[in-house]
Length: 274
Image (cartoon, rainbow, N blue to C red; front, side):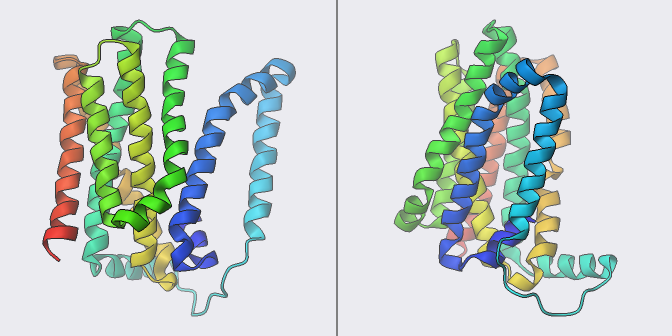
């Protein structure tokens, strides 16, 4: 819904800047929210947490409703017919199909990585919970910093190359944590993955918005959003089996291989086929 709302409310040349702002703001909130939640829990207990979450959700809904968007025209179709039309439109856009497969692979690799990096920090590095929390917050810091220069990077090298760059940084992050022996190296890997993830998310969102027309953006976002997450459960399950049979290093190497596969697919389709 957010992707379609942004496309409806902003012109094409502002999409990447708006997407960067949204991702950056979300990252800033994700960094500060645990500390704020801890204070609320300390002074007002669990009821304060639930009330605060409900209040913020209500404010978000009211704010979203006040965003000016273009008037929608056309006939509202039944949900099944609408889904069918969305799927037919999706399969006629090969660039979007390739992007969806690539993001599916990247999200799967990211799911494996985040599941296992916590185990790596706790079991291999013997870090305490506060130390692990600090390491994980470095990802949000990397994301926040990356969103500040993503629009400039897009103007400099193009959106496809920005996408390649983001995936490449994630590959470096996975290889770094695979061979890490201390908290500093692991923290660097987590920070780099935050940068790579920001580049992937912002550029994938923007590319999808630019490819799809406003009339079918809602249907396409629903289909692609489901595809984006489709690979996470089986890949995380496979990571657990691999970690049990080998060790965590093999999982991180597998993450890097999956990301490289996504990168190769994108480079072949967007660069060599042009």
